[in-house]
Length: 282
Image 1 (cartoon, rainbow, N blue to C red):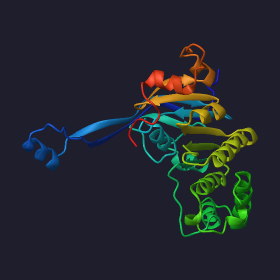
Image 2: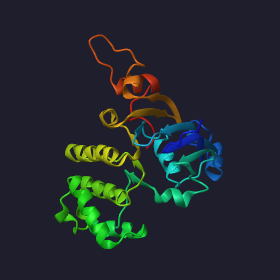
Image 3: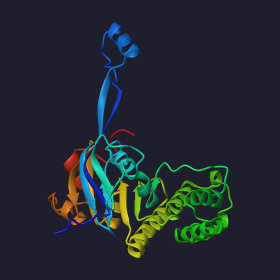
Image 4: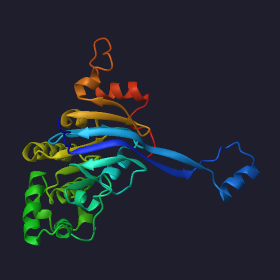
């Protein structure tokens, strides 16, 4: 029997970082001076032995607090970071040894999306498209279509990016990622900071992409309602590890409902991690 080829396969991936250890307040003066001159290092296990499989046409959610490791995992998949150990394959291709091939079939939307702020959204999108060999005329046509479906007024495409709201800038970031028609779309908290209408517009378009294109989508979020609406399966990440994985229904079944109440994903998260989603390092 042939081994199935998933859209995304992650096997026992780790990524650790070193950072200066914060000195204790009660240390003696000489010890504090020594730590300043030669600070002690501590290991941050940002991603610690994670494995997952994402099927073609599936939206896979990663739910975690700030500092839990979800954004580091996305950067590893997108080839922006190299894993310390383990392997990552996109449609069967290794992201380390075949990074250029993998980059051509994926794109990423980040909560920290950056632009040339003095250029218009149209100019930013055309510039990005040209890097992928897409003509200016084709890019402009596709950009208008995508932005229109996202609820972005295309007549504002000629305004400088710095004059646009946070929500409008995020829609441009999503349009930029979709111009290349990626087979794997990595969405790292794409709706964080958006107003309710912009959030609904983006969520509806994510569903449309999956249904129309059968794309592989990985979504990181700390929005419980967003995870319930969009994701076929959800993994809960804490301290660099997956501590639970399954459909929303399967996760809800892990925590018994209290009397006269219905269990929510937030109840599951708190029960499994002992913390709220807002907790953790920025």
